[in-house]
Amino acid sequence: MHVINANSIQQAYGTLILDLLNDRIASVVGQTREINNCCLVVRAPSIKDYWLPYRKLSKKYLNAELNWYWSGDNSCKTIGQYAKMWLAITDDGETSNSAYGYILQKKYGFNQIEQIIDLLKKDPTSRRAVLNISDPSINRINTKDMQCTVAIQFLVRNGKLEETVYMRSNDVYFGLPYDYVYFVSIGLYIASNLNLELGTYTHHATSMHMYLKDIDNFNRDYQYEPINLDINSIIKENYHEK
Image (cartoon, rainbow, N blue to C red; front, side):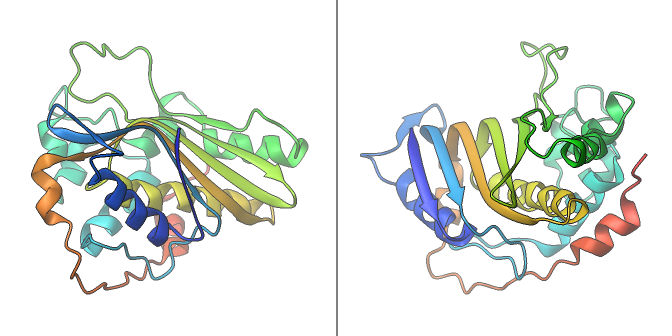
């Protein structure tokens, strides 16, 4: 297990990038540099004035992805306007298997997010507050789009809401910077409904990796530009509890 403990996502991400570039820590696997069973532990997760070291982020895309997820939409064409990658990995040309908001809010005929809020209100000590994302019915042999995230679990401990993400695979250039924001936004929403503070954010990835083609994109001289996100407005405008 490769564990990175940090106060902030900025500290955790900066350490992770350097570790992936270190031949003594990461291995070259196919077209990636990879660390197996990598765990980021962020003690004070935040998406306020969001930025990351070495990586320029797109506010336009980040807002589009958050709106897409929170609306529960699964159209690849909606998000494909902002990143053509989504159009390249669709199996049917219309929908996305990795539309996390759709999976959590609509796919199974009920809203998983609201269900675990109800669960934790009834039993704050529960270990059942799990958002299931990975779909075993998908043909993983032939699909172009198997969900990278397996599940997200929440525990109420020591008066805070602890959040743990489990991923089979996570790309640190395109995936992690945007995944983190959506996952933390879910945690903040649930915590707010429980009148709790969001506690430690723990992020497990069996394969944490950096594509070789992206190495030169990690710019140590980049002048960081914080992105201000109005998460409450995004949720209010897009999210339907039932």
